[in-house]
Length: 287
Image (cartoon, rainbow, N blue to C red; front, top):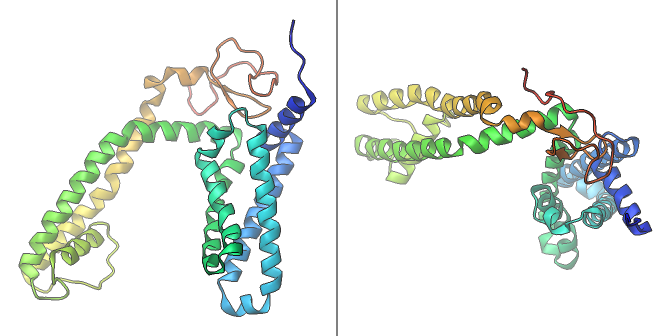
C-alpha cells in the first residue's frame, strides 16, 4: 500500500517547486523577486562604498541591508528545509555562495570593524546563472561543464608549460636587462614576462637593450597563440561530446523542478512527481 505524504512533506515539496521550479508561475515569480533583491543588494553595496553618499543615506542603507539580509536568510533556511539532503546544498557551489553573502552582515553586527566584509555580498551576482537557467541554457551549461572537465588535464599541462616558459624567459630577461628599467630581480622579470605574454602590457617595466627588445617581440607574438590554445582545447572537447557521451541524448529535464532525468523509461519526476515529456534530443545536439 502506497504511503500517504504528510502535510509537512507536501509543504516541503511545494516549497521545492517554487524555489527550484523555474517553469511554474510561482517559480518564475520567486526567481524574479530574487533577481530584483540581488540587484538591489549589490546596488546598495556599491553606494555604501561611496563615502559622500554613505554619509547622506547611511541610515537608509543600513536598514536596507538588514532587510535584504533577512530575506536571504529566510531563502537559505527554506532551501535547507525543502532539500531531501540539506548538506548537499550547503556544500554545493551555490550553497557556499549563499552562505558567504549572508555572514558578513551578521559578523559586522558583533564585530563593527568587519563591516568592510559586506562588500562580499556582490558575489551573490553569481546566483544569476542559476536564476537565468532557462531550458535551452541548462543543456548548453551542462555540455560546457563536461567539456571543461574533459579538457582539464590538457589545460593543466598547458598551464604548467606556460609557467615554465615564463620562469625561463623571465630569468633570461633578467640576465639581458639586469640593472635596467625595473629588471632588478628575477621575480620582477617573471612578472614582466607574464604581463607581456598575456598581451596586457602595463608598461611599468620595459626592455632597453636590442637583445631585450628582440626577446620581448618574440614573447609578444607568442602571446597571441597562448590565448587561443585553451579555447581550442575546450572547443575540441565540446564538439566531441555528442560522440563520447551518448547518454546525454537520452536525458530529459523535468518541467516542474528542472531536474535532470536519466531513467530511460521514467514517466514521472522522482523529485517533484511531475509528468515527464517524451525524451527528445533538444539539449543542443543535432542528429
